[in-house]
Length: 348
Ligand code: AHG
Ligand code: MN
Ligand code: MN
Image (cartoon, rainbow, N blue to C red):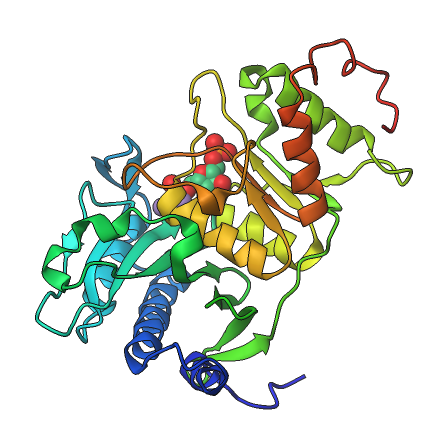
């Protein structure tokens, strides 16, 4: 059904601004800049096989991961177009070792932006959905010139969060704390048009997403959680397994269909693989504003105070009932110890 309102991101934000005067013109133009950067990245993603942008750069980033050419490209586009009108005092990226100071003239630089320019980059050459994730914090310092510490804020303080998923269509999804809204890119007019207003995630998950190849590295309790997700906690029996290997794509599907994404700690990575500031926290804000929940296994992701830009965290993300159940199971010291977990796979 064609979009009846032809509302793009900026117009929709302005409409909502009338309801929530807290958002400023700077904020609206900042979201517009991010949407513009996403369109430029989408153009390269959709023709990646035709231009010399597939494959790796041969370099590795601060995470020790091989940097794909599209990682670098997306990072450069975000740095070039986001905050170009003085709205941002500081930016940080998965692909940069340290934050970048942007604009700290008097009266400018009200926001701090953190982003994962390209999420799921191991999937690029296989033409599997990938994404971009962003967080927007208000500067807390009185003046923009001293805003370095304004980066390490808990997700509860986020002014906005969102992602772009470059899939069969390109979608921009964000929340400013007043619902979660999705916009689909119409290549014909080059605009993201409102297509999914006020997204709500189903309360209980029907899908679980985890890399089962890591099972030998999980704790007994995590193994038991995944086993019960498989064998069924409800009379209806187990769930479906879906794992794309791009967090944004796995999360977007679970957001619309109902599901739980798990990236648990492993013996090799006690805090798991995913980063708090530019992966877990922004998606946690989206999940909670859509009626879902996000936990590190012990409590809300949104309450974690980051100690560093690239800090990692275990992540259980998605349908509220299921993530709360996982958190409850992991809080029980006996759970999975064999005394009550090694059952026949019966529904429990
Ligand atoms: P990025 O490409 O930004 O480094 O993120 C990749 C992440 C995330 O997208 C995905 O959920 C996860 O890596 C997959 O990790 P595994 O291959 O260990 O399952
Ligand atoms: Mn990522
Ligand atoms: Mn990335």
